[in-house]
Image 1 (tube, rainbow, N blue to C red):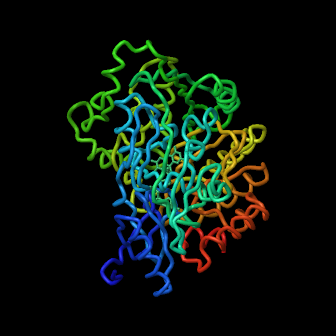
Image 2: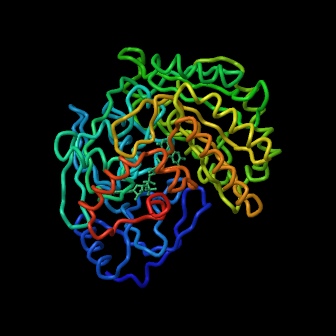
Image 3: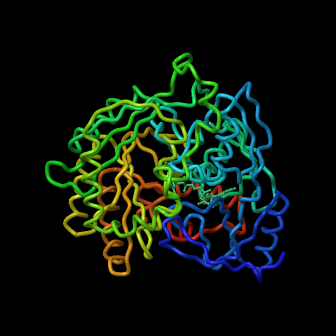
Length: 466
Ligand SMILES: Cc1cc2nc3c(=O)[nH]c(=O)nc-3n(C[C@H](O)[C@H](O)[C@H](O)COP(=O)(O)OP(=O)(O)OC[C@H]3O[C@@H](n4cnc5c(N)ncnc54)[C@H](O)[C@@H]3O)c2cc1C
């Protein structure tokens, strides 16, 4: 294996961070072992990377090696009777749902994009719009096999090597590299999902709806107009959805076929969606996007119920390919905070007001209802999350950084947590404050055991743990 020809510039999803890395594709478990040997010999560090679409630096490794896991993309076993599937770690959610849905199953937890890999999803322990009902993806993992930097292959489940199971899921790829993963799928009785859409007029109503209705629906998510202040602050729209029960869809065998789950390639049947982000660009500034938010809020005032395919409901963000490029050269940063249910309203009011006063508004706000989980570096709380997207420019970059540090203080004071797949500003001090010294000591002890030569490091790891 040779490093000379593989030095490549990699980016995060929002194109706001860049890192030059030795990018090495792997096809099988033995290749991972060889890369660890190479790293030892050269003194370089290693980060595994799936699709590489985390919002931050979690899969970047400036000056080091990046293991490109996309070549390990085989679905190894699928049992439509039990719903158990065993996959290599580079299998994407898209491959997975397309394999299982025609047999009447759906992945138990998915991200807002289907492009993520299972390895990437486990390493950050993703949550979906059903987090309150079913927890994170880790709660549906039956077992996984991981290669440690020592070269050992270890299998973990909630009963076997349980300490590693709960630390590697959420462990940011810093304890070992997932090679194969066994997951339990969720039974479905239709390719459609029933969605209730309703407006909420302020933050109190918004959080009240999520709180009251999360137990009544399989999925619940809110859109929040981050440009609205004063009495309208927190206004938006709730989408709450249920899987159809057996017998509710007379055409279930048809709607579960892949042709029903297609995201169309053309808008209005004419414009290729791949070009749409160019047309969006002129509107992606404070004035244009405020207008878009107002228009969206007005359109959302009508309460209605409809059915749509699973793919349309879950993967709205895949609808416009490369939409994140519409924000321009500086890219975007996502900031997602997780707050206890009692503290969320005041903290988010303070954050949104601050962003409007500073003239650094978020362009998008998405809310969810969460529940705590047992994974070591968990981001979850008994409360809510708010994800905000900020446009980065050369002019606002440092002021935006300061604003996000102030957000961190507000979140910490309110007893909140952060998600390492999203925020790109969280400091080592903030990390210590929210995870606690005990959790960090536990993680570092496992790190010493699994990775005694500290071969696994990423830009994020150096930022939050060093
Ligand atoms: C549009 C969009 C919507 C999203 N929606 C959601 C959402 O609804 N909920 C949510 O929770 N997240 C969401 N995310 C975040 C996303 O799910 C995570 O960032 C996920 O980790 C990305 O998968 P990936 O394959 O690109 O991982 P990468 O970015 O490549 O890697 C992420 C982490 O996984 C590690 N890793 C990758 N492969 C392996 C492996 N084989 N073994 C060990 N470690 C590995 C990397 O080292 C890194 O630490 C969203 C992201 C985008 C861009």
